[in-house]
Length: 87
Image (cartoon, rainbow, N blue to C red; front, side, top):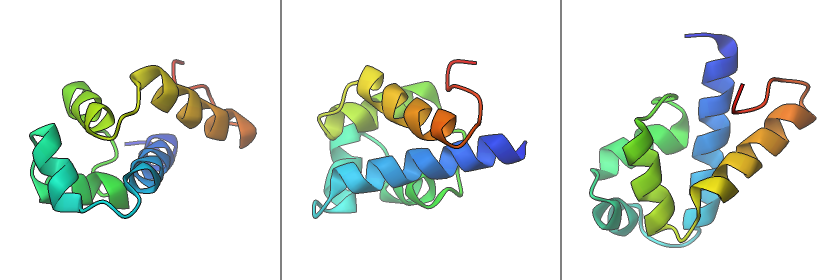
């Protein structure tokens, strides 16, 4: 795994954590159909490359579109001089 992939995973986790806000990790994980441990690993960057359907389910549970999530990740990535998320 490259440094860029790890950093992107950390940004994704931070975005999901921020979107979750005060809502329970257990409640969001259950709504997405994943375990709380899976969500914890994603939010902390310990699972930097989660499966697409896991990310899609979490985005839906958080009321986010995948487009919105991709733009937020890409904005942070390109602002730091990195590659775009779609690259």
